[in-house]
Image 1 (tube, rainbow, N blue to C red):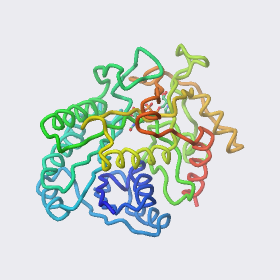
Image 2: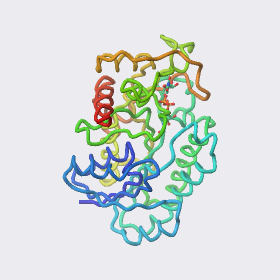
Image 3: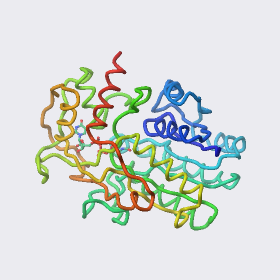
Image 4: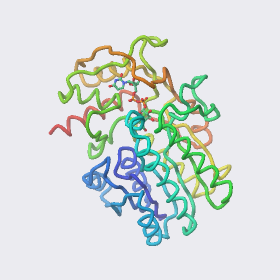
Length: 339
Ligand code: WQD
């Protein structure tokens, strides 16, 4: 079966994708520098699939190490590239870290593709590229707006680098997957989200508040022009998202792609407000969440949720799990971490 490289494969989305790849019989080799993950995740993946993926601790910013890796693994037939820094707020304060870690590493990998047996590349992108879209739900054809953060800019630049490279290399087949808001954990409770430090994202902050690690959730603004005044996002279960990556990879391996560069939005197609997410958590956990309404957070868009038509009809993928399923799995995972 084809050998697939997953960079950032011990991260939140990466680890769930490795599980789904192995479930489909792919051989997986993971590169991760463990800057935002733990080697224990390898154990978690193996506990689920009973097959330990090959793993190399490697920092993709070290070009010579990247070159050596690809010489050793010339039999790779596909790459799913997750490895990147991903905290919006952190990127504002540390732009050069983000441009080096998210852009240089992408270039070093693309430069090595010429030596590979097959050139299939899947890029982890984000709905952040749209900023505040003019029309909802958001289609892939929506204009990419000037990024509101260096993190968002690295995703926009990354997509352009790949698109331009595909233009001059017809052997390279690439797909950019623009995620909305990934949440939840694998039902086995062997893997899930492992935020380091104070979580920036809503759902881990909710579960850490409920378990007693955080005092209180601050809801960043309830004076937005939405039905309950809080921001709206498209929260997609990380397992649904992982499965989409395998389907996209199979599309490239079978050469079913319509062009050698495609873009797909990955969301549920349904928007949920912050307070609706809190209510979902309380419903599935039976816990009363301690939260307060706080000031708006700089850079937040009012609403973002996906038009899933292209992913449904062209990619042949649709999300299956609900917001309650995701919140239940996130809470079960948080309780497991506590023990
Ligand atoms: C969701 C909503 C907050 C925390 C970002 C990136 C995106 C992706 C996911 C990497 C917003 C509100 C949050 C809190 C709150 N990152 N919130 N209190 O900002 O939509 O997306 O993370 O891949 O690229 O842009 O996600 O979870 O931070 O916020 O009220 O303590 O929850 O204001 O409305 P976001 P988020």
